[in-house]
Length: 130
Image (tube, rainbow, N blue to C red; front, side, top):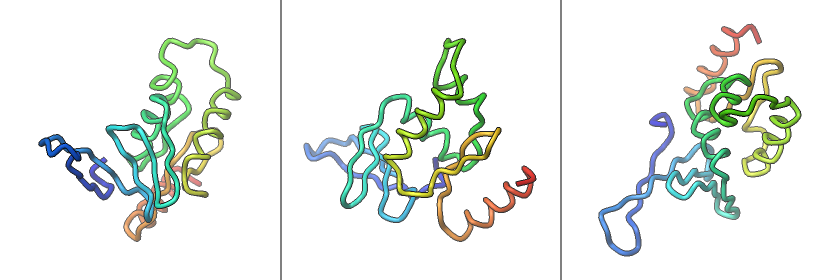
């Protein structure tokens, strides 16, 4: 997750413990410790499954359906594509619009917007033949 802007904040109690917040879109942050995504006007608590998925996405690569099955539904044998679609549909509601892209038949990618990322995203899409 070092590719995102990291902001560390000390706790209000004055302890040495810090809480890591990652900016993934202008004014949108991921609070790793509390499993939440927030902006100036919104706060969304993530489930553990959503937090794991988000951490997979911030590696700035396409997360395949197979990886999602292996990491998010450990031990579930009869997982359907509809179950994955429903999970992603609900997860999208907690993100800025148009930041999570679907690559049909492949998986999902978080589109983190800044100039270097746009270039890298184009290179990845070209490599995938998309």
